[in-house]
Image (cartoon, rainbow, N blue to C red; front, side):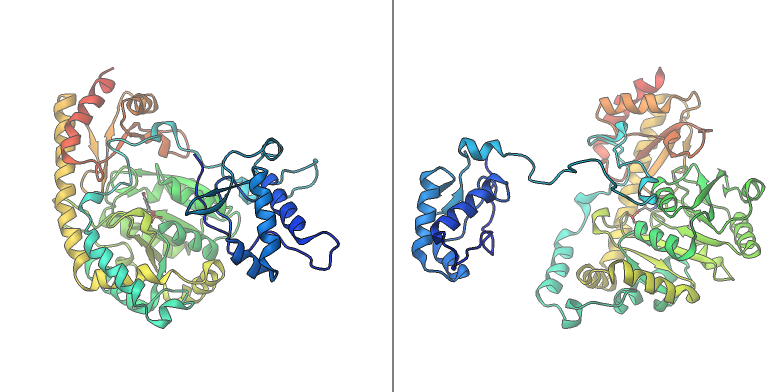
Length: 491
Ligand SMILES: Cc1ncc(COP(=O)(O)O)c(C=O)c1O
């Protein structure tokens, strides 16, 4: 089946009027070469002879002659009422030249690349994560997202943009959006901030990248939670940081253990509201201990608060940033869990003295965030849609979480050990007998997407289990999915 491609705006072929070769021959040769070299592909629409003659500044007669010949030779085909196209079945000589059309290295030689681009293996999807299925992480209940409202806001700003929304903007983001964010973070997350400290980014991932560029040197040591979030580890690895995995216990990152392992670190990356992936909330005393250590050590604290809008049963916990008395915390948040990940909108709250550096680095990276979603989100927050959505989803996810916990208790008999089910969109089912990767592989074969806990360790895994996302798994799919999972756990 040939893919329809739109007509090119400019002709791919040029003609030289002074040449001894007639114009129609130049055109015919030019198109033939473009097809053989696969610059033009089967099914691609060609400009009208009138438009092409006008573009080239020549009479229409040689263009008509060239097109007639290319049609007769089978390079072009015309479809009644639709126009002229590159033939979907090309003559033999044109097919012989088929390749990708992309040049390949012709001989061995120097092709130097950066060392840092080789620090990470090429992206690959872990075998247990291939395909779709119940318990997939990072999925939200999209069927409950208010698309009509959202669409109205986006379309309003797309159709009637203010002039300044079409130009390059502030590298920190649009001020009205940052004001809305600051107000939300102060009241709902206990973050101590003004709009001037808030930078809009394309998700936590960009926030981490920026933070690494501003705070770290190649070789800087950074504490990361063990087990922990691979997305953050990848950014730090790319920055050339030396990662020091620090165990987490029931209270969160074990500061004393970290200090005993390696104390001279530049920064620490933590998920205190809902540790990723084990899900405990860092206790108040541990928070104070961490901040105190950071102050004495002169280390930065990178707080990733990725899903704490969703807490079930227990009181909301304020951010670590809110307890900080030494402006040491870089606070990162995202709309990936509260709205949807493809939005790619997040934010960083910066210590005031770091603002100019972050702004300069950001400007060099991608200048400023895109204006359209910032404008729509400003209204989404300001008009109360966001708060309404979060309230509604908290209830919905609470129901899914309870259903999953019940189904696991029922399906596995007794009281399975569930970790981190107080908040967020996932919980971890401990597997005291181990074998989590094998279980995850077998679950994948049954259309389930369980992430093995051991895959979240940088060093040897000291615990095994299955990390189960419930955000994107509808209530009525939970029991059947657990019924498919249970026999795998009994083995
Ligand atoms: C610990 C953690 N941080 C951040 C994110 C979100 O990243 P982003 O905002 O780049 O979508 C996730 C998503 O899974 C996460 O698990």
